[in-house]
Each structure stands twice: as structure tokens, then as C-alpha cells.
Length: 232
Length: 173
Image 1 (cartoon, chains in turn red, cyan):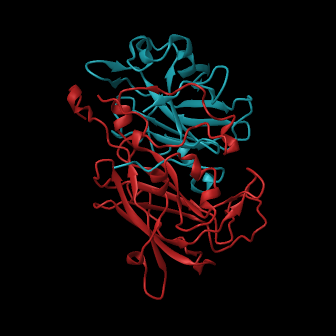
Image 2 (image 1 turned 90 degrees about the horizontal axis):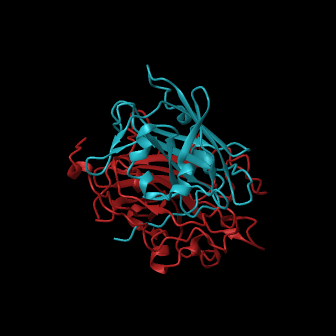
Image 3 (image 1 turned 45 degrees about the vertical axis):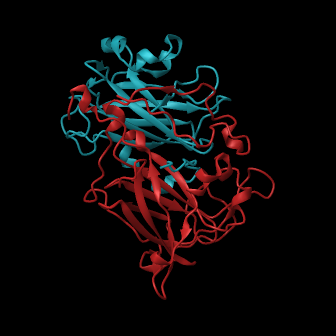
């Protein structure tokens, strides 16, 4: 049983630059609870029943429009240990900055050969990799001339339900990054930097695709419930 | 190491939605079905119609992942309503020699939530609630926001208010 405070450096729930937080943030502080079996256990998504799908750059047998890229990295916990078997669910807009989603009405073309979703699992080393298309920036209604920087959404399921993380990966050098209220809601520059992928030729493939590295650090596993005498 | 910060799931997370995940009994036999439903509203009382709701619970034996998958995911509809089909969990071992009352963890991800919020749904009138070590940490006046009520045979309802009057108790886990 350990107290596991909310990680430092995360964005406040009330982030005035991001208008949608105004009526959705809780006004009471969350109540800290000790980790119990409920928080230290997590669902298992075995690749047999939840097949991996690592290539977003081909859909229905056709190559997607846009700049093909390879994105990969490792999933680690706070102690630097690989989170083996972590499930990554990934979604993004197409090269023109439009999601294959009925509510996205941005006047940019849909690509019939791009669905924009992937699911992969971290290996024993915590490593994972996808092939995709560099997503486009797109406008949103938050403020005048607001455009989201290029980004890829990531959802991670680790070894404990308390490790659950949904976040976004950004691209280095994007001129929209300093202007984005979602990214900049994270108060700490070093913490923001964790969400910016590194251009990485090690992930590139000759005459095929450039590469980016994106490592993800989940919260620690917390205490095992063993010390309470309820080994499971 | 610093942890990677959370960012909002945004309004287009449905690209990864698997609607069948809302039915935890889809691959299960022999469990008494229970519907867990509720409506998510914001500080203006408006429905939160673009949320992703996830749940995690023990099986009827009180164990996690012991033959009962225990995880569900559901999109809220235009009225902000989520609905899971599951079965009632058993009591779960707690810290020390305590026993946790049957409960379902609920996490909400949405546009406007910088990171997900997490609460628990307990079952009203469950005798074990009185001794639950987690409920004991919640001020008495707000505990009702974590108590699902039986609203029809087999149907338990817990509305979630993200902000304002009757604001749901969220847990820092």
C-alpha cells in the first residue's frame, strides 16, 4: 500500500487557453487513495484475441497519400523498466489534416486509403513500432486562426489500471507547437518535450520512409498487493 | 524518470472504439447480467456526448482477470449516456486485512479533459459499503456520488457530474 500522487508536471484540468476545459474540469481536488488490487491490476489484451495492426500507410491494399514515416520507441515505467506487453492504441488525422470520423467536417480531402488507426504491443524490451503517414495540421474553433500542430494520439494500457495513459505525440520543429494551448497547458517545458518525437534515422528505412523516435514513460506500478498477504 | 504527460483524448477517439467492448459478457457464460449506466454532464448540466468511458472490475469471485476479463469501454451517446453490460463483482481484498465492497472503477476521457478522471461505482444498500476503506476516505456528504442506484431490475445507474453542484468525487490513483 503506497500513496501515489498525481504526477508532477501534468497540465491542470482547468487550462483557460483550452476553452473546452472551462465547463468540464472538476472544481474539487481528486481524493488520493492507496493503491489496492483494483489499481495495481489491469486487463490483459493478448495479441491473439486483439490482433496487432502496425501499418497505417496501406489500407484496403492501397498506399495512403502523404509522407510515409516510421515511428517507434519504448514503453518504460518511472523506474526505467520496460512495460512488457503494454498495448498501444493509436489514431490520427490523414496527411491533409482530416480524421476519418463523421464529426470531422474540416474542408480537407478524405483519403479512402487511410483509416488512421493502429494497435501494437510492446515487446520484452518495451519496444514498439508503427508505419504511418505524417498527419497534417488542421484548424479548430478554440480561438481565431487556431490550428492543431501535427500530432498522433496514443492510448496505453500497462500493468496496472493506474498506469493508464492517453496522450499525443508531436513533431519536432513544428511552428504551431508554441501556439498550441493543449500542448502548452503542460506548464513544464521539460515535460512538454517528452511529447515531441525525435527525428531518428535509426528508424528510417533506405528509399522508403524517414523515422521518428517516441519513448513513453508510464507511472510506476505502485506497490504489489503481496505485502498485504493477498497474493494473487 | 519523468512520466509522459497526459493530453486530451479529443473528440475523434471513436476511431479506436470497439462498441462490443461495452458488453463484458460477450465471451462469458453463466453470469447474471447487470446493466451499469449513467449520464455524464458538464458544469452547465449539458450532456457530455463525446466521452470515452472505461470500466475495470473484479469477477464475481473478487479476483481480477481470473477468467472474467473485467474491462469495458463505451462511447457516450448524444445525451451523454454510457451503458455497460456486465455482472456484479465480488468483494475485493483491500489494504491490510480489510475487504473492499463490490465496486467498478470508471474512467472518463474526453475533449476538454487534460487527463482522464477516475471514480468508483459502488452498489447502494450493499452492507460492505459501510466498512469499505476507500469510501471511508470520501467525505460523507459526497459519498452518494459514488453510489449506483438500482433503477430497474438488473439496472444500476450512476450519473457523473464533471463540475459544479453534486460534482462527482474523483480519485487520484
